[in-house]
Length: 328
Ligand SMILES: NC(=O)C1=CN([C@@H]2O[C@H](COP(=O)(O)OP(=O)(O)OC[C@H]3O[C@@H](n4cnc5c(N)ncnc54)[C@H](OP(=O)(O)O)[C@@H]3O)[C@@H](O)[C@H]2O)C=CC1
Ligand SMILES: O=C1CO[C@H](CO)[C@@H](O)[C@@H]1O
Image (tube, rainbow, N blue to C red; front, side, top):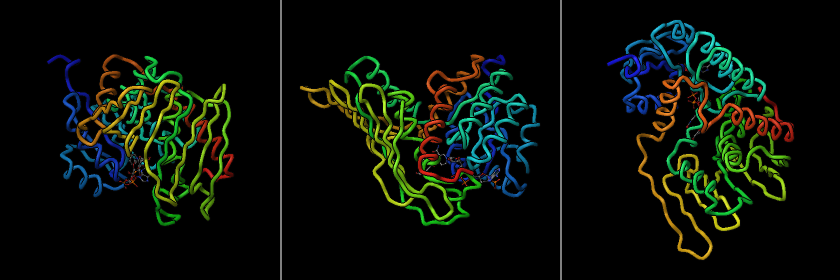
């Protein structure tokens, strides 16, 4: 086996909920060896390592970054810690996959992108939806003109979480609020199909600590095209999405950010249903993409570009400003 065929060695920063799910998908990908995990305590790192078959456990992410055998770092801390950890990882010459919301502000995202390009390291927001095979097919059929010109996109994601200002989803210090955690999926979906909006209207409410609790967004595009997006931590919403064009429409079942069924209805024809049997929990597609791009020496993925990550956070930031929400 030459170096190009050797598995890429990954380190995971965090022992939280999503890290525990994604680690099992990491184990499913043959190009990956899960080498290390870090926590803020040695005990949690060792427990996670033992539970998920990881040979090295560190009590601080800086120790993981100092491990010369780690090639790629997966960052799964709360959003507010993403910028610090990702910057340190890039400075340690690691490739980085960083959870959504990539950072708390567009400015922070821009800084990371500049750093990755300067260091010649791969960097990507873990917007796993983009790599789901049904979403790839949706993009292809839209660009092939199957549903004509896209005029409107709708997408929602929300569930009721009891208010607790110390919990990750509500805590301002951890980047809490509905838009950064949940709304980032509908916003990214609209950007994927229509690009960055020319204007935004927003209506919603704030939690007692000032983070956004719920909102409806109307993204405006040239010639009347638009997206209607909702996110909520106070009410349960269907997580469905619909893309409507002049010749037909595409419906994605709940949850649209990890679809397993997509219906394409072209005017005058019978609806066509596309189904997907998920590989693992659905994260493997993005993990393979990271390996592919790292091996090719690329700094970004064409399916989730740096520019799009920054633009999505600009839209989220404009919506938060429109709501008067507290950020961080
Ligand atoms: N792609 C997806 O489907 C999902 C993505 N996410 C994203 O993943 C991230 C984490 O979410 P989730 O796993 O639910 O959160 P959790 O609170 O469950 O886990 C976060 C972990 O990060 C570590 N941590 C906490 N605070 C800090 C800090 N200040 N600095 C460094 N590490 C810290 C902790 O691990 P330790 O105590 O060991 O240090 C903690 O367990 C969020 O950005 C979220 O948006 C979340 C769910 C699903
Ligand atoms: O990204 C996410 C996907 O879904 C989860 C809930 O089902 C969210 O909490 C999360 O942040």
